[in-house]
Length: 112
Length: 114
Image 1 (cartoon, chains in turn brown, cyan):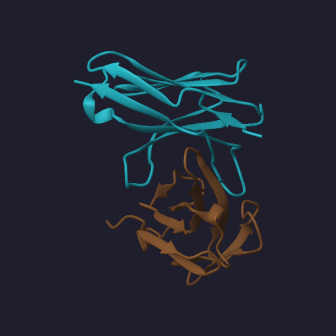
Image 2: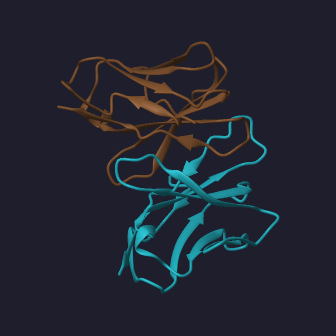
């Protein structure tokens, strides 16, 4: 079956602009996670969804970051007023609760 | 404050030999440990895991060892193959967990030379 998909695969934006990153999880997976990987770093947890609720937003680095999930499926991560330090690969993962996480290919965000 | 550390950014081994990737963690409350493998331009894929009640888990060429007293985790690949060349991340979580979020190390790039 189809895996986790993310779009766009690459995004270049100017500092100060808003961006939206999209994640389509595996059908039926109730849990959805966003992580980011900055250059030379490991994956950093951002937010977790169970269904449409986000019980753990502890990894969002600032209030410029927000995310939503609709219909228990697609999720959008929004970064407002982007800064250069936001440049990273943003990865989405989904799972059945408690099971292993399946990752998408990521969106590479470059803020110029 | 890095809770999970992979101190070797890279490792190079000859095809057929053993690859040993290491990982250290700081919090004794972590009780579930995983290894993920990542190829360029792809997301990480789950490789193998171990819970804190075990000290070894084996799956084909891959074996994960856990030393709880030393808070140390290692992945052994025997024999190594060129297709194993990738970035390997160790990850931990507290299980059971309300969120299942993973805490990752920085990764080790493995190169297996033919």
